[in-house]
Length: 108
Image (cartoon, rainbow, N blue to C red; front, side, top):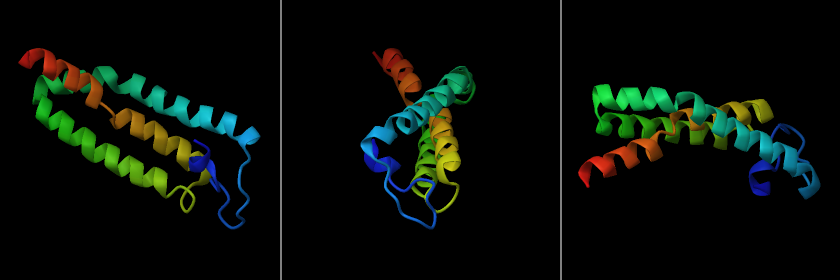
């Protein structure tokens, strides 16, 4: 994940993060993703039961795509704080695994 962390937060000066410095940043980004995913898993399950699996999968794909775009532009908008929030939102919109498992079980 070192390539994702290069120049994050360095808007005007481009100093690369070394491999020794990348560990805490990578942990922070990964943890924010999992926290977002954990906090919204029950919500996505309820939403899939009420409005259908297809709607939830499409909403999740669109939301995940927008969060990925946000994460990709964090060197311009937001820096490290923006990257952490974007990864958290990516985790929050990521309902694909749980809903797909339920859908596969129902179709089997």
